[in-house]
Image (cartoon, rainbow, N blue to C red; front, side):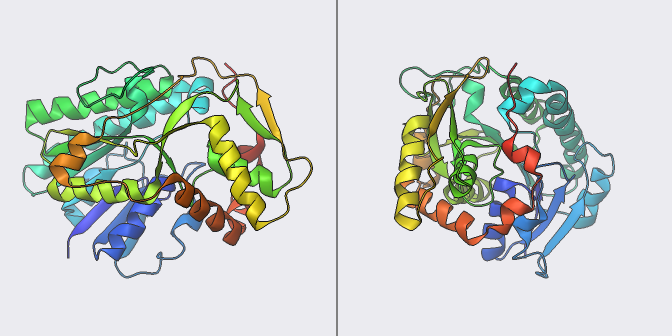
Length: 337
């Protein structure tokens, strides 16, 4: 059975991807250095599987090469990254180290490994590299115009991967995905933070006027797309992965409130609270995902209304998830500039 390495597998997307890979009978090695957003709760349902192995390691560590030759993976999904825009505003350094220097080290070691072993690297990136898309949708040919230190660090890593493909014939591909939501997402992000506040009878902080628009995709749909890219994608190509469904933050909040009210009585302190916007906040992201649909036969299957119900249900059934996190990481406001 094929061995796969997932970097950053204790995080949100990584742990959901591992779950799906195991369901599809892959053997998975999870490499994660263990940051604040890494959570062993995310892998508790499969951590005892004989086809799953966890190794604590930073992708910037030189020992990575030894692990590649030891396990000889047929594929590597790189999800090791700092991802929260607000944190990048407060501390860009960790984003430079993880998202650029770490990726450089991964590429250098994979370059050596792939000369002697048949394998593929799928580098997972974001729609934020394109910057504001006020009209229409950005295809893979759209120029990068990152606004935040986070987006800039991801843009740099994407370019590094692309340069290694062209210069060294590295067998790698890049995916750029829209805003994910779903089970196991750290509550520094909008939807799980709102769920936490609704459950705990707290106000719902919304940046600015709540009009910032994002394209929302259920995490399991994203993971299906990543596996499709691994199996059928063309080396050197970029693939946008989106739902084609945009909603602004206020609309998301109202949808979440509507679904919550159907399940339990909401406290009297739960109300929308508009707060000062973060610096450089992009107004709208929107991807053109026709390439992956036409070339690889993938399409999202989960509507936002269904996905938000599944997400809310997971957090309600897994109340211990929030207890596994540092409370300050849940309640503290970041990214003030």
